[in-house]
Amino acid sequence: MENEFAKHEKDFIKIYQEKGFTANFHFKNDKLITSETKNEYAPNDIYIVAEHRYEGMSDPSDMSILYIIKTNKDEKGTFLLGYGPSADLEVAEFFKKIPKSNVSNDESITNE
Image (tube, helix red, strand yellow):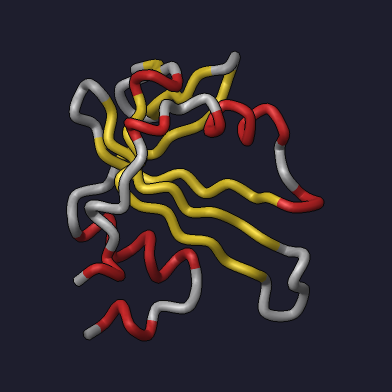
C-alpha cells in the first residue's frame, strides 16, 4: 500500500488530495481562510479528522503537524503547522481552541 512508504508531509498531502482534501487554508486575524473561496473559519467551525506528526530527518527539532480538516461548510483540506522551536504561536493557539469533540482520527490514511 502506497501510504506505508509515505515518510514526508508532501507524501501524505498528496494522498489526502487524492481523497478530496484539496482546499488550501491560510491563517489570518485568528481565522483559517480558504484560499479559493475566501471562507473564514473560527475554531468551532473546524473538524480535524486526522493528524500526522513529523520530525526533521537531519534536525529532530524541525517538527511539524499535518492537520486534515473538514469545515462546517463541507470544505476539505490540509494545514501544515510547524511546532517546537519554529512554531507560529498564534496558529498553534488557534488549533488548541478547536473543541475536543471536533477532533477525531476517523479519516486517517494510517487506519486503512
